[in-house]
Amino acid sequence: MHSRFRFCGSAAALLLVLTPCLPVQASKPGGKEGHHHETIPGVQSLDVYATTSQLHLLTGGLSNDGSRTELYHQSSSDAGKTWSAPVRVDAGQPAPHAAHRGMDPQIAASGDQLMAVWMTPGTDMFGGGPMATALSSDGGKTWKAGPNPADDGSTTGHGFLDVAADARGSFHLTWLDTRGEKRGLRYARSEDGGTTWSRNDTVDAETCECCWNVLAAGPDGRVGILYRNKEPRDMSISWSSAAGTWSAPVSVGGFNWEFQGCPHVGGGLAAGGEQTSPIWHAVVWTGMEDSLGVHHVSSPDAGATWSKTQRVAGKGASHPDIAARGQEVIMVWDTTNEKGSHIEAARSSDGGKSWQTAVRLSSAGPSATHPRVVASADGGFRVFWTQRQGEGPTTWQSSPFPSSAVSTVSSNSNTR
Image (cartoon, rainbow, N blue to C red; front, side, top):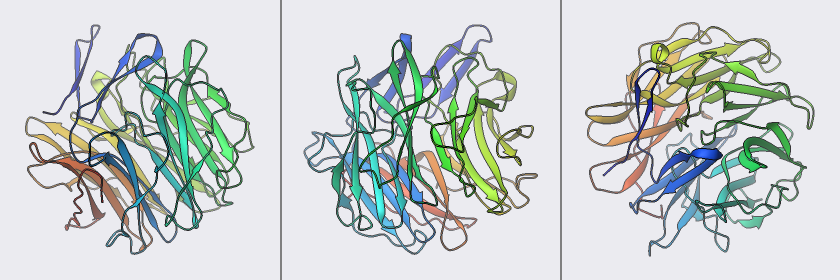
């Protein structure tokens, strides 16, 4: 059986039904996160990263004996039509802890230099612990253990990660951890492919406890982190154009959503427009009663100001992502109704000013959730998601978009 979160806000008597994620994670008082594991076969986590010539996929699933989660890498040089054989990433390292959709182990690439990062078991009250990294210098053919990027020496939870590479080949990483009594947003940078890491920066000392974060490195050299803030529970963004210097957070959406809890929904961030003057696009979700759903916003001035929100999908829509190339912008999300959950996508050809009617990507029957979208090397876009039919295994699927045909890939519990 799938599990759902229901958060009831007493002031508005608001009932939010969020799409299933496996295993389930629920927020706890005091900035802690709680983990409830369900032994369900199939893909537990998924991340995808696009370079100018390759797609890199990182999936997590139970080992054959069910004792741990294992991570596997695959790559595609034809925009997702075919994939290399899976290669184990985390062999000889601590297993990923609580890997599930919405807290997926992450991957990034710069040429043949690849990096994967995940949270391992530790000593917090829910079993979370330090980060682990794995590095590849041959495009994912072989992997070796890398260092822990955190410098706090803590064995408590370091989760909700995101990693990206910039045009110079530097890797940028963000995550949530607790230092003192507050759960906050941290950042570190590696200039040598993950062999060493910078000192950690605190981007925001107190944030929402358990929504995923998004880090994007733009063509102009700027790095942005989109995350859910504490009060109000709106998405915020902070920028760095010089190592270790972060701007004050700016609200993205400005819904002023007061909510005592964690909705377990992050957003998406992508750069479109021109290389020399990128237009930043964000997709954000809110549970605010009169604005419920996923919204597009854009910034023509490197994130200093943001457009008014455009609601692209309303009630039932959640877990969004976004990708952009030039004036083309693609938004994806899952929609939950009485029949289950399915994947939808919408396209803008004018930089987000207007949006075409959303189309359904996932087939009828399976419950599909947590889509990701990337700009692919063939000039189009590729959407990824996970789905489950009844009591069968969870599989990952992908589809080119715009396209009416879905290219489906199924996987077993360990993706081999």
